[in-house]
Image 1: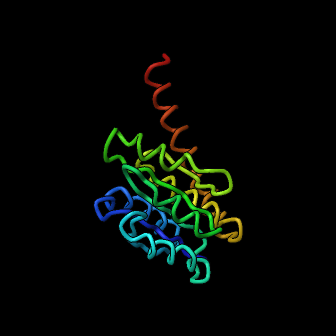
Image 2: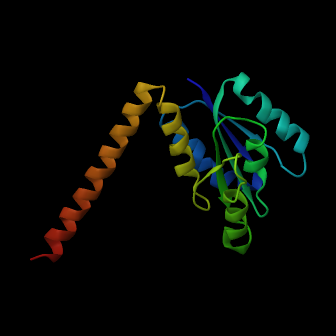
Length: 163
């Protein structure tokens, strides 16, 4: 199975990014983690992105706050799917969200909610599951379990309030 590369622009992003790592581990998806900055180490960031596919990476998750150019800088240097996580660090994360989502035509970055690391990991799992039937089965089971939990909560609320 291909790995997911989880990249953060700063180690201060780790508390948010940890949720992506935990989700990937929950699904048994191998991953690697790095700190690269689009602004402070652009050459190393580009080198990583250019070689990621050859090194067994299938999807890249890039988390950054403020100017949040990391996902775009990575996407500019690879044809692998890149998922951006805007990190809330200033302006309630809106600056990071807009920097991540507003990519020019031809260089797509899938973008999740501000601090949406778990969903970024789930999207990466869905992408990898296209070629991994066991992973697709795990996703389907998880969705069923989520449905069952909501229906059980609904039944409890209805029983208490719909008399």
